[in-house]
Length: 309
Image (tube, rainbow, N blue to C red; front, side):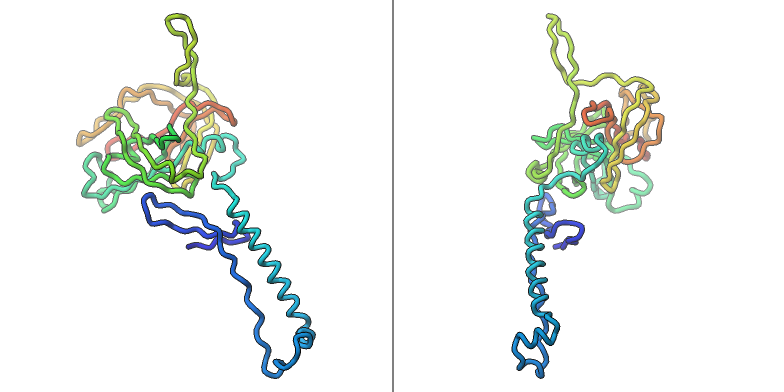
């Protein structure tokens, strides 16, 4: 167990549960009583309590009052720790505060001898355990469904972990890998992250007209425009979130080069380039503010021994 510093966090105890999924649980810490004053020497042991207190300058009364005050403060810290809900780190940026419940960090581990469905880089060829990191997008918080890219999860035979809010980690199962496009569907146990207010991505509803002339709402998004100013919220390898305003540079169908030896490559997909330098493992391109729509998802694309964001 790990004892948190009382001056920085409420007094509590964190315990690691070696189970599937692996989680950290917060428990109310037991307040330890303060140490009793040392026993006086043999020469002063025969003195009454009042005389001993006067000889030591009233130390007995002061120590008792300090002990009672410390116990009261400790009990208040334990009560506040038990009542404090588990949530996401606060942020003054409204865009980050709205987007962070939809994102999670993806960590994949593949043993070198079982890496059969993707091309490895030079560093991965010399390692016994291949580790890759990426960004997951929660598409159904009620069912525990997350999508990520094929670089982060290159094959179904892998150990996948998801980290939410920089503190809750749970295992995930690979449900589906698209054979042509760059996305993978993962599923996690909803009960493992139940205290967290995880949210699904806000796919906008675009009204359309059917053959009868009635308006009908479908899931989709408006097309991006060149020169449009949006906010790019990215997730880094240390689970840190960052946001910056960026401008849409170009939108086109990218021609991906062939891999040697032959392997998966993306095709027939519209790519958006930004006029700024991107940082992080990926993220979302959204309208700034607390109520902006989600416009695009930035992911890592495998291309032979390299990958692109």
